[in-house]
Structure formats: C-alpha cells, structure tokens
Amino acid sequence: MLAIVYIFVVISLLLLLITYFFSKSLCFALILPLRACVNQMIGIKLLNVSGVELNPGDILGLVTIVLCILFIITNYQSIFSTSMARRISVAIFLLLVWYLLTAGLSDATFFNLKKWAKMASWLLLVPVAVVVFDSLEEISTLRRWAIISLVITLSSVLIANIFGVGPVAYANKGGLEQGFHLGYYASESALSLALAMAIPLLFLPYLKDHKTKAKLSKFAFLLLLINFVCILSIFVRASILAVLLGMIVYIFLSRKNKSTGLSYLAATGIVVSIIAVIAVFSLTHQAQIKLRFTDVKSYQERKGEIESLGSGRVWLLEKYFEQWRSRGTVYQILGVDTGTGGGQKIDYRLSSGTHNDIMTMLFRGGIVGLILFVWLIWQIFRVLLTRLRGNPDDVSHHLAVVGFSALAIYGIFIIHGGIYQILPMSYFAMLIGTVAAYRLPTAQISVSSESI
Image (cartoon, rainbow, N blue to C red; front, side):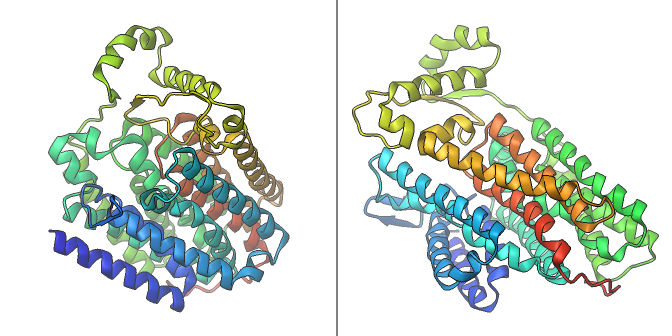
C-alpha cells in the first residue's frame, strides 16, 4: 500500500513539473484537485524531516510553494498588467504573506515544514488569480481549462476511494460522520462546485435565445441553494451534486438545440457515473454532527453552559474571543504572539470546527490581517456589482451572477465556520466568477458550433 502511495505522489509531482512548462494554466488547474486527493491520505506518513512527519499532501504543498514562487518571478509584469489584476493580486499577496508569517511566529514554529506545507494553498492564490485572468482571454481556453479541471477533480475522488481513504471508504468504516465531515469535504470541493455552476454558462455563446440565457443565469442561484442544503444534510458532497445538476442542464439544452457532440456524450457519462456512486454508497447513510472535545471532562463541566446558549458554535466563538482578548496588544493588532499575553490555548472544539471564520482571522493576522481581508472582499464585490448592473442580455451579466453565487457560498462558510482548506478553496471559487465577469466582455468570443 505504501509503495502505491509513493508511486502516486511521484507521478503527481512529475505531472505538475512537466505540465508547468507545457501549460501554466493547466498546471495550476491540476494542483488543487491533486492536493485535495492526496490530503485525504492523512494517516500515511512518507517522510520524517527534523522530527516532523510529512504526508503526501504536505509534500505536494512544498512543491506548490516552489512553483508559485517561480511563476511570480517569471511573470512579474503580467501580475501587474491591469488595474484590477494589480489590486486583487497585491491584496491577496499581502494577506497570504502576513498570515504565513504570523501563523509561524505565533506558535514559535516558524521553521515547521509541515505548517508551511499546509499554508502553501494560500500562496497558490496569487498565480491562480493571474492564470485565471489569462485563461479567460478566449472562451475556448476557458472551456478546455474548466472541463480538464472538472475531470481531474472527480477522478481524485474516485482514486481516493479506491485507495480506501476517501469519503465513501470512511463512511463504510465508521459512519457518515467520519466520511462526510461538514467542513472538510465542502471546502475541499469548492473548486469543482464553482466549475459546476459555470458549466452551463460556458456554453452561453452557443445559445441565441436570450430567454434561455436568462433562465440559465438564474440556475446558478438554484445551484447555490442546492449546495447549502447539501452542506446541512451532508448526504453527498455538495459539489458533486452541483456538477450533476449542471451537467443535466447542459444535456437538456443540447437536446433542445439538437446538438449531440462529444461534450454531450461526456456530460451524459459523468451524470450516469455520479448517480451510480450516490445510489450505491451515499444514500444508505445518515449524517451525524456531534460536539467533540479533546477533553471529555471539559465537555461535562461546560455542558450546562453550552445548552444555555442553545448553540455550541456560539459558545465556542465566545471562548475564542475571550482568548483573543487575553493576549497582548501586539497579538491583537498584528497576530504575533510575544509570549507575554498570558493567554491559554483552548482545549475544546466542534467536530466541524470554527477554524476559518472571522474570529479565527483575528488569531491568524490580527486586526491588520482582518482589514486586508475585508478590503479584498470589497474590491471583488465592487467589480461584480458593476457588472451585474450592466445589460441583462450581456454575457458579463450572467457571469456576474455566478460570481455572486460563489461569493455567497464563501459568505456562508465564513459565518458558519469550516476547516483549514476552506479559505483557499472558496477564494478560488470567488476568483472564477469575479474574473470571468470582469474579463469576458472584452474577449473575442467565438460563436462556433464546434463541440468540445
């Protein structure tokens, strides 16, 4: 088993390195799904560096850092080529660097390779933002890029289950609570969810009926609603159901327009596969979300306090806020622990965690980091709002709807709470809708009937 994992990781790394020099867009489209896949192999330790055990996801994260730095150095002028790209890239870069530094300094583990590997997905956002800008120059590039990413993402889920480490495997071993962790699999799938919402809209140039276009844009909001329901029920990974619905809509439109090319057959195959997986593995389980503490005695002592608030999450937020206030002023402003604040670490948590919501941002980057984050959200919201106020029949209007849907999904997560990967993945979901809404109106969109 370990040998198989070694082979898989080596092949993944070689694939990334080769693809980087062949197509940077494809390379960064591959990184997130591959890392999501290997990160499910949490229990498998491959290396031990200076007493720190590294799993496949950590190794891929370190490689990601190298590729990102290489990309930024070699594409410095492209990053700052336009006003919008400059604003978003600078904001993301400052935010990521700040969080990387403060996360390490706060815990006195600045040279902890494992921590830096896990934070690699943050740094990944800078080149991804630029890559998406470049990829959306032509609709053909966008379609090709999106479909490849979608296939890789779904393949990653299947591969993980074959190895016995995916959500289905965990569900069979210990129930759905282990297999479909509320935050983990929702955040892990944000990329495929964003692509799923964009799937029907990728074919807008091929549809001449404006009413159909309007219905298609509204469908993005339906996918958002479905995603939210799935997160609450945790029956299936939200993104997989979103992909399923997106593909079904495209199949319906293809039949209506009498277009049955290769893309139609591929969409049909994906729909059948997803339905089969859901029918066989997912619908036979029920979700369970429980308060889970590292110290059982702590839970019993605080049980009355939790029940009086009516929500374990509200109680946990209050405890985190108390901890933040107990630290020194430097920590509160900059997110850097000087060791003189006297604050104690919390020894309890929710199973779904409160890891990357607004309160945790205060811990990661202090008030400064939180301000940078809010400014970035405002920049994205401002561009989306401008596009949404445009011509309802324009392509940018429909894509702005997708952007707002992705932004709303992210809003659910920062309020509801998720786990470690939630910010990078949902940031990426926002970038897809944002950049598409910003860039496509000026692109040369082909109205060819050529199939994908």
